[in-house]
Length: 377
Image (cartoon, rainbow, N blue to C red):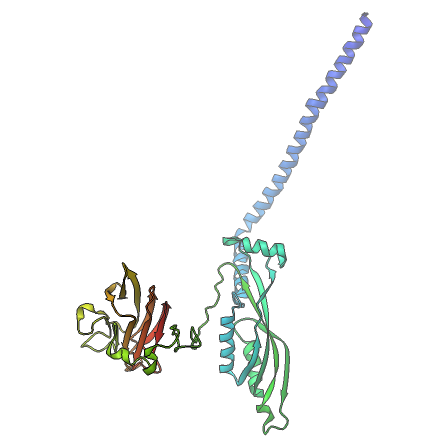
């Protein structure tokens, strides 16, 4: 190879080295430097922004607290749910507060329509909301429309509209019709019509549904037999005289009297009234819980009765369990003595209560819970 060609090859090799050095070394370094400069610029901008926010920290905290307070005040204008029990008691309260009677009320289930911060409820939004836990639980808005037919006085209807407008929770009326009897002696006293009442609720974190206050009888477990709270089926010998036989022959007796009687405890529960060793008692002037458990052990039936930790146990040799409740009228408003009885019957025996001389307006005896066959006379 000639010297000229060698020189040409050396020049070409030098050029190739320079090009490769630029491509694989210089260019990447330049790109890395440019990227770092861009990142530095972004970080500097963010730093400047955070510094500016830090300068206004107290202002932002105050505004956040104010916004949270305003949010809580707005949400508090709506209940946490639209359960039907609360709605029924609300409608009952409306009737008691106004000259207004609900002839009928259609009560459909509530519908979720909006999730705060996410928009209208779709299948995806609903699934995400349902799966959320803790602080991630969203605020979900729901509504229900009640179709109401009514009658009442004209003044009563106006009072009703005012009642809705000033109710503690936001409600609205989307439609009202009103008519009156032109032939009535006083047409304004005999009005009727319909109302479309719309209610709304917001569920979410730290929102507790209202617990309805129900002050009406709950009915009976079996509409075909017995009195309120009874559960015994069919006809039994005690039905013939409303359980009077239990007074003279019973497995357990409850004596319910005024707690201020110094001679004896206000509440005495005993399997043998003449034997104080079988007593469980309470001298407190309050309603106490009496637990009665009837069980089968080794082919024998036993009854355990207790007030708190004071407990007694007796064997049952009869074919059923009879309990005589000898109560009394209340002395005055300070006389609050009484019992709430819980019966758990895990045997095939039937349990019969005979309640005598209880206060008619404020009974001392209440059958609170029961399991198994239980009947009250």
